[in-house]
Amino acid sequence: MQPDNDGRLQAMLDREELFDLVRRERFARDQRRFEVMRACFHDDAYIRTTWYEGHGGQAYVDATREWMSRTGSSKHWVFPAFAQVAGDRATVESPAMIFNRAKPNGVEVDFFVFCRFFSRAVRENGAWKLRTFEVIFERDTMQAVVPGENLEVDREFLSTLRSSYRFITYVQASRNVHVDQNLLGDDRPEELAAFHAKEERWLAGGD
Image (tube, rainbow, N blue to C red):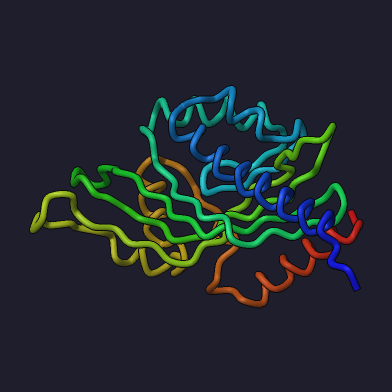
């Protein structure tokens, strides 16, 4: 049997285009290139993060612009790893890290979030667009920027928070942002398995 080189080439092109899409969207966001960021999203994209949930690519970009004007610029490292393509639908899951500087309780801190970004993508007019953007949290850390500086934290409050995104929740609370404690995380494997099953059904043509 002859290898299907055309099919293999198309599959490779799809994966590379999808990987480029998810890298480009986060890079554009971090560098405040909002027009580039907007072009990555489907018009009716659904986005859920610690500080935002809603529909519409333009609405999310506008909210991001305002959010960054108040909180500064967090950064993202993204390493696309797993893409599945079915016709004009695809899903992409990418190991990632979010890092930012904040000042809860008057002490400057760096916090680091280890996570994965998950997106549905759809192909329209020959171009892939992000149809969803969600974060799957793994764990996070927080430390004082100045070595040895005393970092006082509300341990009672910390004890009520999810282990997969405890410190980013703590920092967001200092910014008066309520973080839903039912986001996706490795500390709730059954919920995560149900989420992936739902995404597999969508990829196969479901709603």
